[in-house]
Length: 146
Image (cartoon, rainbow, N blue to C red; front, side):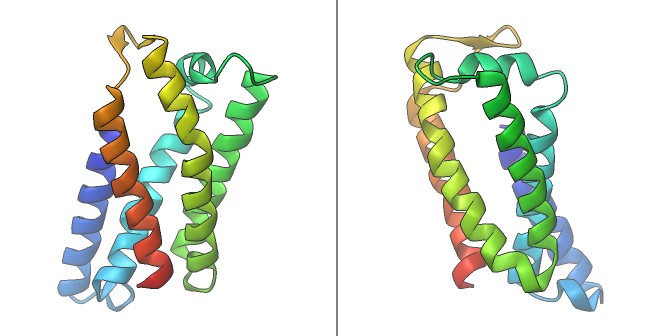
């Protein structure tokens, strides 16, 4: 739920800043880029901190080198977040992040089917996780086409 909160709070705060006169944030498109960037900074950082072991456990068992995959996806999320903040690279970054989310979704499916617990709690149920994934991908696509 933290990524959704980061997306919504970041977008709202950026939009309010735009309404208060920050020209670079004047409009929903730049505000959404900031909210999405905040979300990916949060999730990307988790690949290297306390949630790392949980994320490694989520990688489907049939995939090789789960630690490397978690590191790679974390780096891509952080680079994508930075790309969202630059108008010249925002759209390509959003495309890349949307594709990355689609590529990583099977890990969420696998974790739910295996009944994993993360940080002592069950993973997000698959139905809820699917709705969240649709929202996140839609936000990235809104940046691409907005």
